[in-house]
Image 1 (tube, helix red, strand yellow):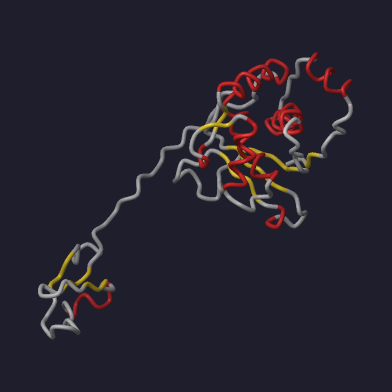
Image 2 (image 1 turned 90 degrees about the vertical axis):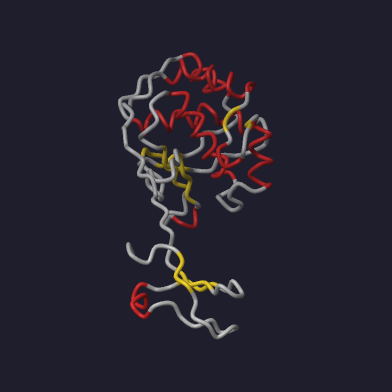
Length: 215
């Protein structure tokens, strides 16, 4: 991953040069770094400064299990004190990637201090993002601005990775319940052979509830 150093916001000539010259990137990280520079004016227009970031393609810390398509790590998580952003390899279109990147950059601006709380929401809504904050994406106006940047960014040099999502199996955990008062206790596997315990309230044997066989 390559560290990104913010360019001076006062250089209008470099901004116009970026918009005028279509880019061709052979590496995904190079495309992502260019994308950060492309959206930087959108953040600056709302008085938000994108900090130095490292950005790459990779799964979130939860893997693909929860379907997360991006993750930003705080500066406190890095020995270099730099935000690190990962974009899921399951994404393929340039717009999906750019939209996800903007979401993660909002976290970077906040240094991941408030998750998807009101501080994140204030930044996101100001930029033109819509929807539940955990999955907020570009609203119509912001979407048009992002789509206008795509020709200059060029093709996203990546073919999406197809990864099946494992569905979690919820088991009916073994527990014991008193038929008289309804008191319940969870049962540990090593104690199942002893059978249901005695209810501390009614002094009667409790009944087995849940799956006591397949534990």
